[in-house]
Length: 362
Image (cartoon, rainbow, N blue to C red; front, side, top):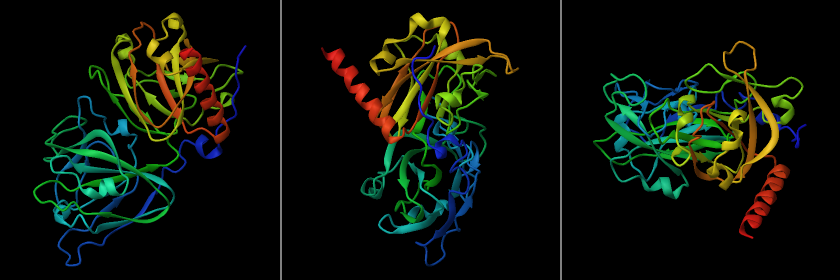
C-alpha cells in the first residue's frame, strides 16, 4: 500500500519534448558594420560532442573531461546553437555583437574562453556562472569528452523570455570567441558532473523521465512502472532525469560522487535499490530525502521484464549546487530526478522541509 499520491505535473512539463525544438529562430551579427567577420551560423538541434565551434576555424566543442561535465552533462545534446566567427573575439565588449531570436522562454548557455578576464557584461546582465568548463579541441582531432582539448571555456547560463535579445563582444584578441546554445526553460537542472571521475560520466535527460528510459550510462537497464502503479500515476513522468553510472554503486557514502546545479527550486527524487534498504545514506537524509512509499521497477535486460525494485525518496531543494555522495552498495546504483514543482506542491514541500528542520533542531 502506498503512503502518498501526488497530482501530475502541468502538461508542459509532462511532455518530454516540450520546448526542445527551434528555440533559437534567428541570429544576426549587428556589431560588425564593416563586414570584417564571417556571419554567424544557426544550427538548430545540432549541438553535441565534436560539433564545429566557429565559422572560420576547425575548432570543435568537446566536454572538457575529468571532473567537468560532458555535453550530455549539461543536457545540451541536440540543442540549438550558434557558430560564431572566432575572429569576432575582438569586437567591443561594450556594444552588442549578435542579436538572436527565441521562439519561447529558454535557458541560454554561453561558453566564454577561460584565459582572459571575463567580460563585465556577464555579471552586469545576470549570467550565472556554473563553475564548470567546456573544452575546445582546436585541431578538431579529438573524439569525445576530454580528447584533443587545447583550451577551455567557462560556462554561464541565463533565462531569457521569448523575443529578440543581444549579446556583446569579448573585446579581447588572441583567444577564442564564445559560442552559445539554448534549451528548454521548463527544466530544473543546469548541469551534472562526476566528482569521482573513475566511471562513465553522468548524463542529463531534460524532461525525459518515464517508462523505459535507460537508467544508467553504462548499462541497458531501464526504469519501468509496476503493474497497476505507474510512473504517470505517481506524477513523475517528464522530470529531468540524471543517468548515473551503475559501476559507481560501490563508491563510499563518505565520498562526494556527483555535483548537480539546480537552476530553480525543484522536487528532487532518489531511486534507491530495495535490496539495500538498510543502507540509505546519511548524506541523503541530511538533504531531507524521505521514503514516499512508491516503488518503481528496473528492467535489467531491457527485455520487458521487471528484475528488481527501487523505492522513491523525495525532498524539496532550492536553486543552488548540491553534492550527492556514493551509494556504497552492491545492488544497482541510484538514479536522480528533478522537476520544477507546481506552486501548490512547492509550498507543501517547503512547509514539510521546514518542519523536518525544526524537528531535527529540537
